Length: 254
Image: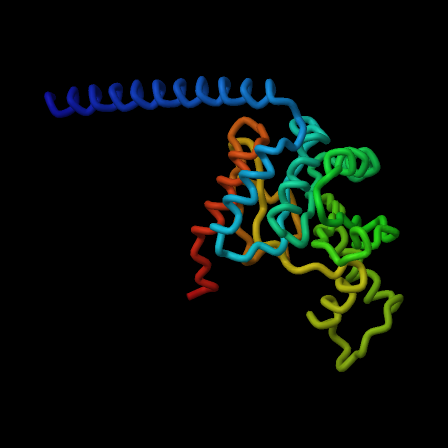
């Protein structure tokens, strides 16, 4: 009987401690968010200094970064700042996975926001759907970052469309048998998708880690890292996510 009462007391104590820790955590992030709101939504000299100071310490090469976006939670300014930080960090490809579908329909607004924040920062930003940007700064080759925007329709629905294209023989493939092969599907996928490497890192916000149907055949080796619990975006949690990625040990099935 005593043992049962002891267990109940311990359970209540642990529950009470967890509630206190969660409350402290939420209060801390509220104050921190207010601090960043007070600083504004611009890419500041402090942001640039922090990126240039900390990125050399991230020894794990990050080539393709994906950011899960939801226009109900993230502003164009949030997304534009992450593009600029990634440009400074030397990341070559940045893709936005648009959960709501709103961003892809309004890509021009994001483009204008990025261009506004980029002023004075060296490098070039190429948009996959805007090939007129040439990737040069003052006649010299500069670091170039390539931007893509994907939605749910670019995942399984596009795979189904590729299979339909093969079945209807609308795409010329070298056939070695009467059965469809993985090589044929891979060939058609390469025709329909931009030539970019598989994602190294996906950043998401909020309490739940979910792929939302993002390009399932390309994320077998991708790390998912939480940017923030409350959907906030700032330079501290961005750099913190890069450090967490740097500590990931990919065993490749070993």
